[in-house]
Image 1 (tube, rainbow, N blue to C red):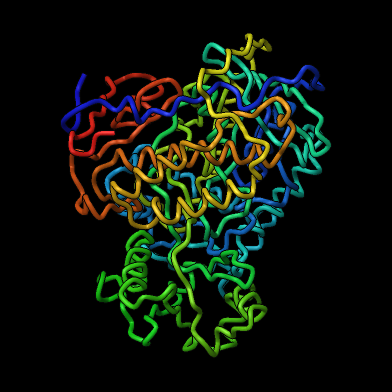
Image 2: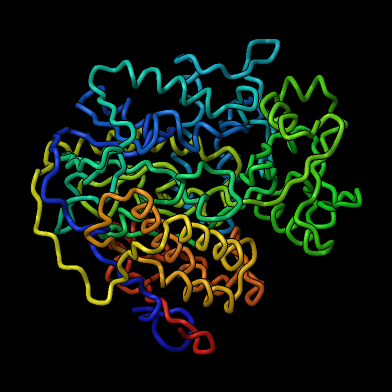
Length: 575
C-alpha cells in the first residue's frame, strides 16, 4: 500500500455515520417503478426523458419541477461549433481550468457529444440566440479560448429546463412526484433498491426501483452567501454516503466571482458572460485590478478571479468590489442581459449608470458521488449525474458553462446505463443496522434554523475562499456537534432532516479540505500556498472507512484497477 505524506494515520478524521438518518417508519405507502430519478434539474430531466423511451420512470423532486439550480443558470452552455474551434480545444481549456485533476478520458466524452446535443436541443425548441446569418450566436467566457457559449439571453438555464419540463409532464411513461423529500436510500449488501421518502403531509413512501439515478444538484447553500437555490445543500450526496457509496473531491467548492447581495441578503449571480462581453472589475477606488493578478484579466478562470477579488476586498477592508458595465450602454445591456438589468433595477441600482457591487459566493461543487463515464456509482443499481456526481470532468475548478453540458450529457448516459441494469434489478430489502453508539441525535429544543445559520457561518468563516489548518480544525470541531440522525419523535420534521443532511455534507467538505495540504484550483490554503505534484490525486471518503486517495475516480474507486493509496497526514498537523 502506497502512502502520501508523513506521520500518523487519519483515523480521527473519518466521519462515523449511521446507515439511516431516521428510524424506519412502521408504515409507508409503497410504489414500484422500473427507474427512479431523484431531482428535477437538467440532469434529472434529461435522464427521465431518455429512460422513458424504454421504461416506466418515477421522477421525484423535493420542491416543484421548476425549482432547481439549473433553472437559475444564466451564462450558457458550451460546445465547439465554430469552424475555428474544435472539441480538442474545448478539452484543452477544460484541462487547464481543472488544475491537474481533470480526467481527460471522461472529458473527451463530454466535449465530443456537445455539438450534436446542442443541435438536438435547438430542434426540441430551446430558443438559443442566433446571429444574422441564422447560425448560433456564440459568446466568450473566462477560460475559453474560443467563442463557444450558446445562450438564450441571460436565462439559458430556464430556456432549457422549461423545454424539458414541458416534455416530461406530457410523457405517458413519466410519473411526477413533486414535494417529495428523499430521506434514505434503501438496500443493503452493496445494492440500492429505491428510496424512503416523506411527503409534505408527513406521509412516508417507500419507492421501490430496479435502478435509481440521483440528480439532486450541488451544495452551495451550505454557505451564507451563495448563487444557489436555498435547498441546494448536497442532500443527494448525504443519501449516497450513508448508503455506502464513495464520494470524492468535496474540498473543491467553486466560488463564483461576481454575486450581488440583494436587500434580503440572498445572492444574485451576475453572469460570467458580462465579463466575456467586456465587463471590468474595479476596486472601490475605481482601479482595474485584474491585470495585476493574471494576464487574462477578467477572462481568467473563476478560481483566479475569485481569489483576486477576495484579496482586493481584504486590502481595502471592504465586503465587495465593483463590476463596471456602464461603458457597454443601456441598449446593449437590456438586450444581452435583460434579467440582470431588471433585477439590479429592482434593487435600486442601474448597471448602465453605476457599477454593481459584487463579491465571491459559493456557486458549484466540483466533487460529489464517484461515478464512471456511464454514471454508475460504487453501489449496484445506483447512478448519479449532474452536480451531485463526481466524474472527474471539472477537476479542481470547473470551466464556465460546462455544468449544464455535463448535466445533459451524463444525465442521458446514466439513463442508458440504468436501463441496462433494470433487467437484473432486485426488489429486496435487508434489515436496517442498529444505530452506532454515541451517534449525535437531534435535540428537539434546538431549532433547525439555528443549526443552519451556525453551519453557514462556520463554512464561510473557515471553509471559504481561503483556508488554513487552524480554521479547518475549528470547523471540524464545531460541525461534529451537529446531529447525524433523528430522534424517533422528530422523524417527520423536514427541517431537521435537511439540517442533518447539510451537517453531514459540511463535515465531509471540511474533512477533505483539511486533508489536502496544498493549494490547487478552488481549494486554497494560506498555510500550504503552493501546488504540490504529489497531491495530483483525488481524496475519497466512504462510510465506515478511512479516507484514501486515488489517481482515477472511475478506475480506482469503482473497479479497483489500481491499488488505492492510503493517505497519511503529516505529524505537525495530526488530528
